[in-house]
Amino acid sequence: MGTGNFKDRYEFGIYLRTMLSSLDPAVIANDQGIWSALALYWFDVLCPATAAGKREPDKEYRYVLSDDYRHYYRHLVRSPWQLVRDHGVNAQFLLISPKQQAHPLTVHGEILEQFGGRQQVLASKPIIAAASKMYFDTKTGRPRTGVAGSGRGSARRFGMVLRQLDLTYDPECMADVAFVGILPGEFDRWKRKAKAAANSHETHDVQQVAAQ
Image 1 (cartoon, rainbow, N blue to C red):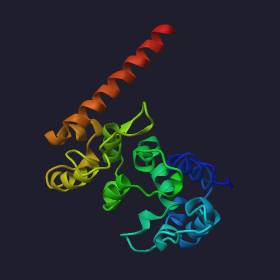
Image 2: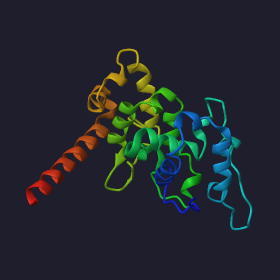
Image 3: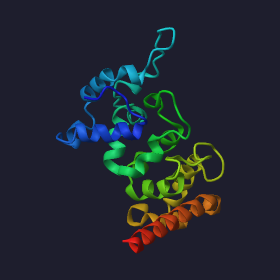
């Protein structure tokens, strides 16, 4: 297995998905032994020692998989595996910190915390794909500035608004573009960024075809 030289939790998740690909996801998803053992193996990067040689462990559920639905998505090894397996590149905004971190594998992150509180949201491919389009900046390779805050259109607001939309719409039956379209006005700036990024990508594709 790797020694822990991962630049972020998304890269870690890719590694885990590959490493565990021969195992049945349904069998290992809630296997406390596997995830706790892997956390122990990578403990030096999940809970690195300070300059004084001391460790400052976080909550137990970060390292030992909890069977409590409020905590198991907070496990520092299982979550990257699960999110990359379920969502691929769309998981980047959930696993990469908005700012550079000295020890990226130790950071659960505010964005993931806001989405992880509702498992039906975290498991939804259309919702995560839509949020990724709005919140992840492919140019910087990080979530856009302001996503992790509590302001208008932030990840926190996304979860609150989604509770209201659930009463009228079924995101699982919608394309991600259609879902973005029904979000209220407070998300307009994120919608514009997503549209601009999509247009830029389309232009780049056209230019590549023309150059061939």
